[in-house]
Length: 133
Image 1 (cartoon, rainbow, N blue to C red):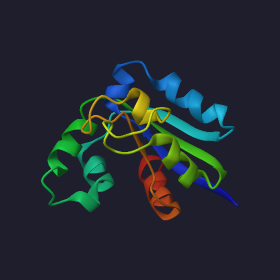
Image 2: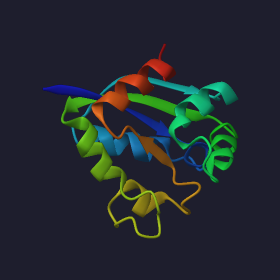
Image 3: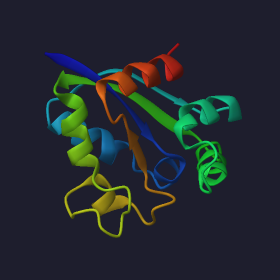
Image 4: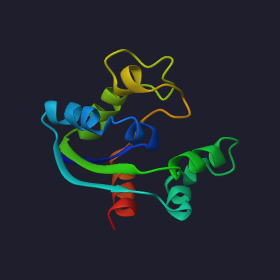
């Protein structure tokens, strides 16, 4: 069954010129990119996106970081794409992300970990509607 996932290339990765590197990894896996756009997020969109973390000590830092520069939002499509992309992205903490994963190879800190990927098909649909309304 074909699934879709939202991927956000975060401000640090955009400013470091990593868009092509990251998109190329998805294309090499034969994932289909069905939508892509660069944008700077509003605080409202960022707070909605990270809504499950509201009230946690790191929430404000997440929001401030994601609105600090441009992001590239992608809708990626393939069978079982959500779980496959999560494996490709690697652990949130880049210090323990395995080499060969996007975060293991490219991220420099847990706070600025270069990429977001939907964690379930349900989250993907909610996130896609938020970024591609």
